Length: 193
Image (cartoon, rainbow, N blue to C red):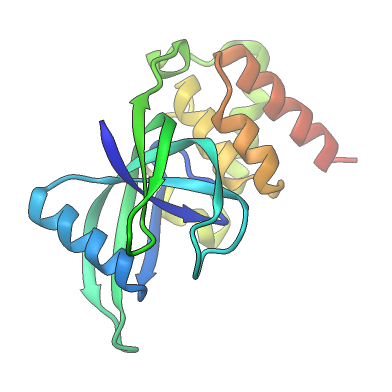
């Protein structure tokens, strides 16, 4: 399906909740269209360029998101909260006259999304996530994570670990549960050195 894209210097994962301030006309139009048609859009990491101004270069994997709340902010801007639903592969991108990026978005179906039980060998990942959820930034997920669910643990750890956006992007692009688990263990081990 053809989707509007919202390029950011942030990687989000299914289940991520993110507040955004909307001020550029192209994104105000996007939000208006999404609310009118009751549909979502795709958040994708910028590979080269900026969030504001000319359309940037982007990665080919992002997350389809839906608007879960909106409000008029004290600064006069539109504030929305989005929740990521599923990963998508992007192709055939184009730029509208107003600068809005569009692309064909295909849902990524993988073993990662089958919610298998976290293997015992990776139990330390669950413990690390529980520690990260004590941070004020992560409080919104505190009661929403099933620590025995591989997918939930992988996505929340990927979002919350203090690693680079490029490292997070590789996690988002992981094709198998094993690949994502192995990458997370490598990142955690590197952070503990």
